[in-house]
Amino acid sequence: MTIPIGKREYESGQATVLVVAAMSIFLLGAVGLAIDGSHLYAQRQMAQSAADAAAQAGILSLFDGTAGMGSHTAGTAFTCGTGDTATPCQYAQSINGFGTASDTVSVDFPDAATVGISTSSLSATDPVNIIRVTVQRQVATTLIRFLGPSTATITARGTAAIVEIPSAIPIIVTHTGLPTKGGTLSFNGNPTIVITGGPPKSIQVNSSNAGAIDTTSCGNAFVDLSKAGPKGTGANFGNSGGPPSPCFGFNFGVGKYQQPASGITDPLAGVPVPTTTGLISNPPTQTKAFGVNGCAAAAGCTMYGPGLYPSGITVQNQNALFAPGLYYISSGGFNMNSNSTATMATGVAADPQHPEIGTAGMVVFNSGTGNNDIFNFTANAGASSPGIVLHGPPDDSIWAGILFYEDPTSAGGSHTGLPGGNPGHQVWGGGTLSLTGTIYINRRSGITSSTYQALTLGGGGGSNTTLTGEIIVNTLSLGGNGNINMNLSSVTRLVRQVALVQ
Image 1 (cartoon, rainbow, N blue to C red):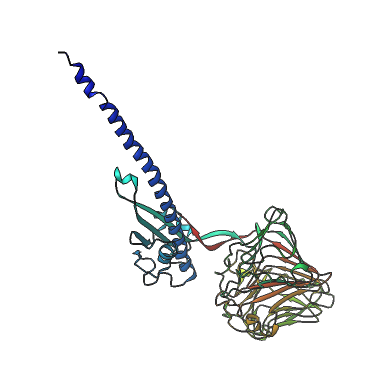
Image 2 (image 1 turned 120 degrees about the horizontal axis):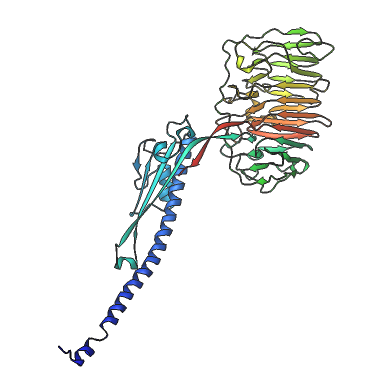
């Protein structure tokens, strides 16, 4: 059969139309995919930021013990309602903009296995230690709707937890009360602070105040961290507030001044507060001749024993020996005055009430709240040989190496409110002052700009003030005209912190 020529000419061009139509659909899909894909990706990123922020804010409210779940119960899953006051809801809906009718914000509290982390890494002291926030949004499509759905659902999840991680302990100036206090770290005189060893960060100031470090006399101080850090080549100085650059002379080595720097929570918050149970009240002193129980003074020594001291301990014009154990000071303070020396007694059995302290150390706990209820080392203390050489308990004991322990629950006394210019606890070295152990003067709660615990650590000209350990205090003043040498350990402890885990 022969097809007429005219018929073939009539049908020519149909393939071209089909190709053009197909290409148009393809191009429409490609352009739509590019436009809608970019839009959905941007929405997904915003949703992820909102979910992460909401999860972190929610876990921080649990970490701080505030009423962060509003009318909901922590540990029970819920969906955020309109105007929901729960912290994660506010952060997702109000602060990050996911509160429209097309948005859904839900909160749940999964277990460690669901999240894919180790249970051992979570804080055991928090009954609810994981929170997950899921953010969803219905997003209208544009060109792609001609070929597919008119809407697409984007979903993002953020998971945060209260974890316990090993952390080395630097010098921590812990004041973070509201309002945050200025001058939580200050310098007086012309001190030179030399820090050797320890963790990657030697000093951390937690206050977010713009004047967290007092700059009044800051220019007269010199901070040498060039031999600090795990490798002894330098370490960091962290400051959550201000000033933005160091106001003191410095040598950081490979370290640096970090501002702003995240605060470090109290790593010894779990150390128990001593009690008077079983302690001997006003234990009698003993006279020891030169060479007996470590007495290094030709004139002889007075040996103190562990127990309860209702009127405090004052050493003046005296060579003191301290037997190992717990010294509970309920009033009167712990005072090293002029012409005093003090060393640890040797050859003495461990404190039967607290054998964990061992036979070579002591814990001095101060619970008094009066004007004179402080740790007080005057400038003339330790001026003669052998000076003042005291040692705390082992780092792995229940007292975590604390040598001087101020009651962290103390609510009164001049050394917490500092009226009338009282500088609080004072540890000055006019001669040889060598302390091995942690100085822990750290009110744990209820801290404000006028209620806190303070320490002044200083050295006189020609003195040798050496601390082998850590300083954990609400506020710290470093002063004097001599060198303050600190040998920090790299001991790690489990520190309770907030972290985004997924």
